[in-house]
Length: 425
Image 1 (cartoon, rainbow, N blue to C red):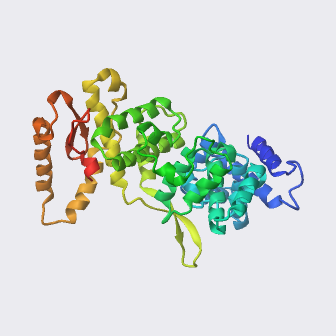
Image 2 (image 1 turned 120 degrees about the vertical axis):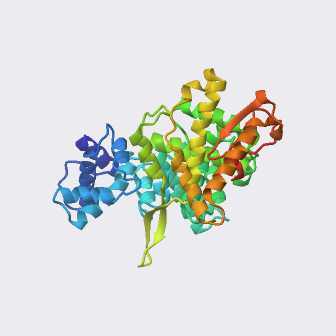
Image 3 (image 1 turned 90 degrees about the vertical axis):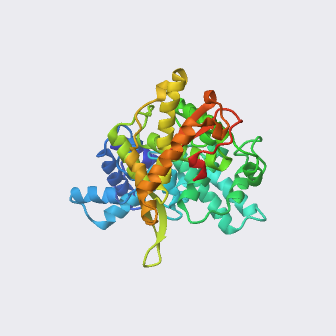
């Protein structure tokens, strides 16, 4: 398999696979050999599965370096050659790195655009560069950001510039907001791509119009993440619709991001073909491990930029809504087994995992003992459960959104005035 992929990549790069490994391009071709041999040693049936299994989306350089060391080939030039060859493998669509990894500049500066422009879509990138140069209000920096954003989407999604969608741009913005310290020039990037006709005639005329077009529906919020498993995608949409009457739009959008991107999209990416919410222990554990960190560009002591995995500060804030999602499905399955019953499975997040957040908060306020706080929460919980009049919901209309440690009921219609604890937080 490595020989086949090597030949295909060489042809994409314009090299003759059987030519001697000397002269122009020899370093990249040697690096490609190291890279594909390393990937072939990883578990999986496809190159993409092997890439995901290697953990390269979170620790790219360590994997090939350790493998070369184990093979008795520790020279630094081999490691650099393998790293350089990754751009060639991306250009040939052998692997598709995660969008977050690309946003954090996992490939370094500039190289991604050059490789994709040369090997994947020369005409498309030439048109985009010309549009940037011709734009009277497009600065050099904005044009550079636009071209790199386009390259990120092509590398992560496959295809060419013409295949980029409005949903891809929205997903990229979500990823940038979660990864980078600041985000700019998005309106310029959108306008340039739309002017090229990439989004079609029905796309909003400007970024402002797209962002101010009113609240997006649950289907649109989930649709931006391009989930492959249709039943789970439809379930998330239905879940958001059930929760929508009792949530403000900001909370609904945040919940869609947690469930759609941080939870299920991540699981699909690292477990191709997954179609059940019943997660094996190893799958759930690996997902929670990935959730604890996120890629970020940092400045080292020498003043250079490098990618690093930093702690996700809202880790517990992500676990709680996902645990609530599982518990809601279990509760609703009792009320409507035909609709929700098939999705009622054990929750992969234990109660004590979300309670760690309460311990941290409680330790910051020693004047209020944690047992008293817990007792208070449970007392309020029982009041809400036994007294539906407090929230103006008839008993036959009650549907609980189960969040730890407090459950606040919300209605299935617009009559409710209650707010879930998740939204209040």
